[in-house]
Image 1 (tube, rainbow, N blue to C red):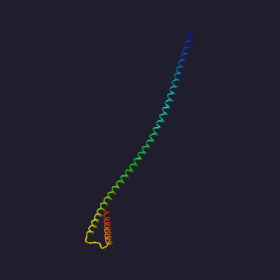
Image 2 (spheres, one colour):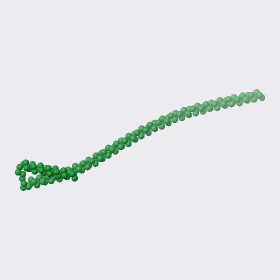
Image 3 (cartoon, rainbow, N blue to C red):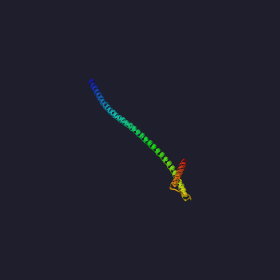
Image 4 (cartoon, rainbow, N blue to C red):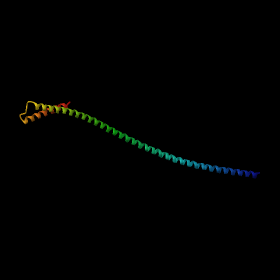
Length: 152
């Protein structure tokens, strides 16, 4: 009996050793899988970190681009305002020129009427110098009238 008990104890010890070896192997496999999983996680964290850096860089570039667009729009606005002011000045100058042209046409018409009236008068110049003086006097009068009208 003692031999049977020894044999049984030896088998149980052998079974325990075998089970311990199996558990060690399974633990080793789990540790290896865990190490591999941690390596994969580390790689993914590195990739995610790179993506976040890329996104930050792209966002900065985009912000700079938006700033440049805003600056360009501001310049376009300034040019548009300058063009608008120039157009207003041109329109005003054009209106003044139109008014002056009308005034000049009226003055020239009056001058022509006065000249026609003078030529049909009974008065006739006795010399060419006198008729030149008459024309010069009429021209001076016309210039004075124009300068007075342009003040309005």
